[in-house]
Amino acid sequence: MTNIADNLKAIHQDIINACNNANRSSATVSLLAVSKTKPISLIQQAYDAGQRHFGENYVQETVDKVQQLAHLTDITWHFIGPIQSNKTRLIAENVAWVHSIDRLKTAKRLNEQRDSNIIPLNVCLQVNISGEESKSGATIDEIAELAEFINNCANLTLRGLMAIPAKGNDETTRQSFRKMQTLFNQLQHQYPSVDTLSMGMSNDMNIAIDCGSSMIRVGTAIFGARD
Ligand SMILES: *Cc1c(COP(=O)(O)O)cnc(C)c1O
Image: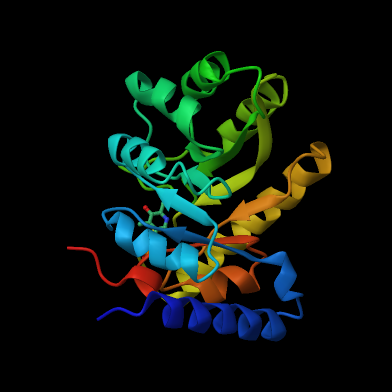
C-alpha cells in the first residue's frame, strides 16, 4: 500500500536536504503533486496530509477532477501536459496555472478564453531545453517573443519557465537545468512578474533544486508508479 502522507513527509525532508546542500532556504522551493492517472481518493489523501498544489496532464481528466473536488476550495490546479488548440477553453476555465505553453497560438487562445472577471491565468513557458525533435517546448530563441506577448495579455500572468530534460545521466541533466537557470535569470530581469522555475521530477529533483528550481513536479515518489 502506498502511504501518501509518509511519501509527502519524505519528499519535504528531501527538499530540505537538497536546499541545505545548495545553500538555499527550503521556503524557496514548492512542491507540485502530479496526480495524473491517479484516483480522487489518493488526491484526497494528499490533501488531508496538507498538499494543496496538484498537477494534471490530460484535459478531460483535469476537468473531471476539478469538478469532483470543487468543495476543496483551497486546492490550486496546474495543467502541465501538452496543449491542443481545441482544448484551450477547458484549460482556461478550469485551472489556475499552465506550465506548458510553447506557441503564440496557445497563449492567444488562453488569453481570449480566460474570464476577465477572475484572477489571470498564471503561465510558464515550456522550453525544449535538450533540443529534442519530437518533444514539446519552445526553442530558447522563441522564448523572448512568447514572453513579450504574454506580458501584454490582460488575462495571463507570466510566471516563468518549465522544462523536462531528455533522459540522460546526471551530468547531461545538470547541463540542461543550468541552461534553464541562466534563461530564467534573464527573463526575471526583464519581467517583474517572473518568479517560477518549474523543473525537477521524482528522479532528478535534487539536481533541479541545486540548479535553482522553485517548483518541483513530483508524481511517482508521492503516488507510486503509474501503469
Ligand atoms: C508525469 C510528469 C511529472 C511527474 O513525473 P514523476 O517522474 O512521476 O515524478 C512531472 N512533470 C510532467 C510534465 C509530467 O508529465
